[in-house]
Structure formats: structure tokens, C-alpha cells
Amino acid sequence: MAKIMLRSADQAEPTRFPEMPGLSTRGAVEARPVIQGGGLSLQLWFYELQPGAQICFDRPEHSHLLYIWQGKVTAGNEAAGFDDAIIIERDGAVVVRACARPAKLLHFYSPVPSAKDAHARGKVIVRRKKELDRHVHPQAKITIYADSSSEGCDIWFHSGETPDGVYDFVDQLHSHSQDEIIFVVSGSILIGPRRYGPGTAFAVAADTIYSFTVKEQGLHFINFRASESFMSLVHGGERDSAQLSERTYITSLPVEA
Image (cartoon, rainbow, N blue to C red; front, side, top):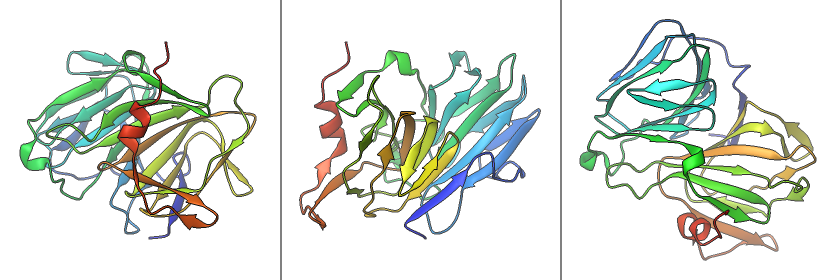
């Protein structure tokens, strides 16, 4: 695949809901493939559910994650809204239903079997952002929804937001040990001279050295990986030989009061 693949959720053409074992829909669900193919081990789909429409998970073969971008849904008996996430382990079962207004969801998953699939217990977990710790870095507030440490699920998923008043910085050159998908929720991100706004997804191949710039609009993004990732910083054009556990690094940051 190309080292960095860019795609807009709004520009992706509507198509049939993806055919995957254990997934089906009821009611009006529009599906758009945002990141798919190209040798990437990850996929991202965008769904718009009309009121009452459902996505049904019935013992899928792999773990999945839904992020609520707009609107409100129920996952079984639990409610979830903007910036919340629903994690469905392999063999999990749940019906995700749009509430009284349309809902826009992002569906992240990897078609590659996970090392932990054999240990999955079919859990369905609703992660509400307001209930999670936000770790404070000078350039971002980071919230981890899933950190690859679950016994039955390898998924890594986090969000980052620029703090109030921090609107102009250049991220240090770095790389990650896993393929990843970055999605711009709000604000904008600059890759080179070009600015990309809400709805833009970036698929970045493992070990790709990259950086980005944030300007006056600030940035709120989410990041998905199929398993735990390690980061290498780049100094003077050379990548550090030491790799840093992202889980260890983020959780060492202070928690917002």
C-alpha cells in the first residue's frame, strides 16, 4: 500500500453494507467504504442510520469498534452519543439502534485474525468518553478507549484534542509499529502544505515516518490500531533505535482534574 492513504468520508461512494460473518442491518442504513484494501490490515466504514435503523452483531469472527460521530444510539440497553465508542469482541452479540434522529457512525476493524481471538469472551463494552481519564500533554489531551490489554481483544483506540489556547504546533517526526487510521473529528490538520478538515481519514502504514501541523482551528482526532503500538521518534533524520510503549507513555502523563 501507499505509506499514507487519504480519504474523505463524505466523498466515498455509497454502496451495500459490507458482507461480513455475524453482521447485518435492519432499516435504512447508508454505508460508505472510507479506508479499504490497498494492502492495509485495517478497514474503516462510514454509516448513516435513519431513526430506528439497526446494525446487528451476532457472534462476529473478529473484534469490531463503532465510534459515534453524530447523533445517539443504543447498544442493547446502554445509551451512547457523540465521542463514545462501542467495542464488540469476537463472538459478541448486540443490536446498535439509532434513536429519534439520524446517527453517523464510524466502523473500524481488522480482517486479520487477532492473537487474542481464541480468548475472546464475546464482551460488548460501551466506552463513554466523559467517564474516561484524559491524560494531559502540552499539545494534546489524550483519552484511551481501548489499550490492547484486554484478555480477549487486541484493539487500540484513542482520541486527541488540542487544549484550549494551543492552536499552532508541529508534531515531531515519528513512526509507529502498527498500521493505523487517523480520523479528523473536528478542527483541521496539515500534512505538508495541505489542510484537511473534519471527515478526513488517514491510513498510515506501520513504520512510516511522518509529522503533521496544527494551526488556528485546533484539532480533535481519533486513532485506531488493531493491536498495541510502539513509537519511535526521529532526531536529525535518524529514527531512534529505542521504541517507546505508547500505553506506558500516555498513562504516565498527568490526568486532567
